[in-house]
Image (tube, rainbow, N blue to C red):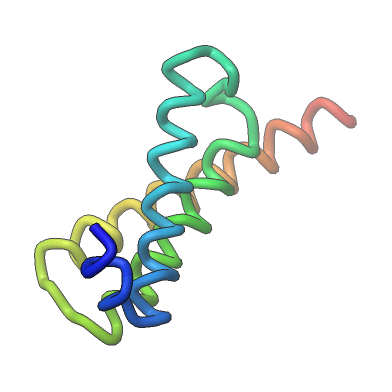
Length: 91
């Protein structure tokens, strides 16, 4: 395990943290700690996916890049929807 950690570059570390963020958001939703209707959910997913995407820029993998592209797009859609809901509540 120590060998794996010592071989990580800083871009790998960014992607790893991004992965932990995305998985934590999913886990929090499954455990009902975080509601998927909350604006925080797509924001956290988008941040994590962007971090993974950043690491893929330096160590490209097409399949991973493709899923992160869609994950970011879907999260962006969720952020826009969440902002619309928030604005409607304030009106």
